Image 1 (tube, rainbow, N blue to C red):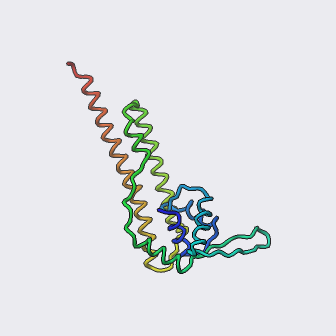
Image 2 (tube, rainbow, N blue to C red):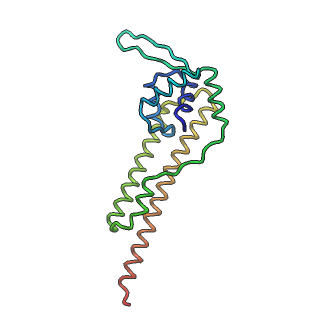
Image 3 (spheres, rainbow, N blue to C red):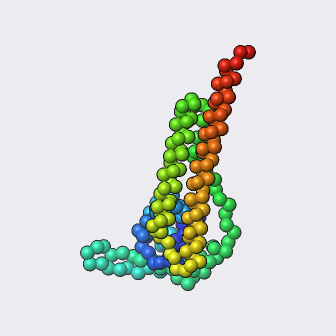
Length: 190
C-alpha cells in the first residue's frame, strides 16, 4: 500500500491535519504503515505540488496554528484510478513462522512456552480488534454500503486472528502427539 493512496482515501472521507492522519494510521488494523511522521508530511507536500491535495492554515487562539489538508478533484481521480488497479496478492510475512521453522533447537518446554506466548499474543490482538470494531473508530459510515464494506474488513481481520488461533492450537496438539510418540519409541528395547 502506498502512503499516498492511503492518505488520499482518508482525505476523501474528511479533511485532516498530518497529525490526525498519523493517528488514523496508528489506530487502524488494516491501514498499517511502518514509516515515520516525516513521510506523511513529505507525501502531503508532494501531493500538494501535484495538485492532488490543498491545504489551509487555521490559526487557533490557545494552540499553535494547524494545516488542514483536503483532497482535490484531481486527487479523487487519482484515488479512483488506484482503486481500479489490480490488487496485490496478500503478503504472508510472519516473524513467528520463521521462529517456528527453527524451533526444533528448543526443548519441549521451551517450544511449549514459545507456542503459548504466540497464542496469548494472538488472543490479545483479537481482543483489541474486537474493541476497535465495537468503538468503530475512524470509520466513515457515509452510506450503508460503506458501513458494510468497513464491517467486512473488520470481519476479515477478526477471521484471520481466529484462524491463527485454530492453527496454533492444532500445531501444539500435533507437536504434543509427536512428543508422546517419541517418548514411546525411546522406551522400546532395540
